[in-house]
Length: 154
Image (cartoon, rainbow, N blue to C red; front, side, top):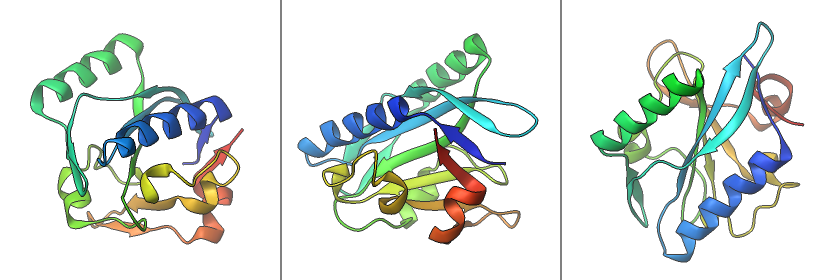
């Protein structure tokens, strides 16, 4: 199902990722959304409390509990996870291990260079998009399919 995200959410996402990058750490945000019959609409950018280094992030149990409470209270779901890498964008073993969402079709986006070179206008080109498959693996979505089938910025 396609995820629809507005420009303000992209701007907020990039600001959070750049702030973490200024400390030489990966950043992580979760897009919280609401499912409709045709799409998932991103309604909020959520930055969970997390531990991060240059090459990994981890969301501890207490922060996961806080996330679950937020989701229940607002009646939302995690539409996608978005995080940054210090250099090129790819889904690392640490990303596989610490992924927040693991349902078929879940999206994980990786932004290169701590988002320092990414703008709202280049977001879809710069992001590497991965989808959680039915066989429990993160697979890269070909860039030519991203905006037509997986993610649109409105």
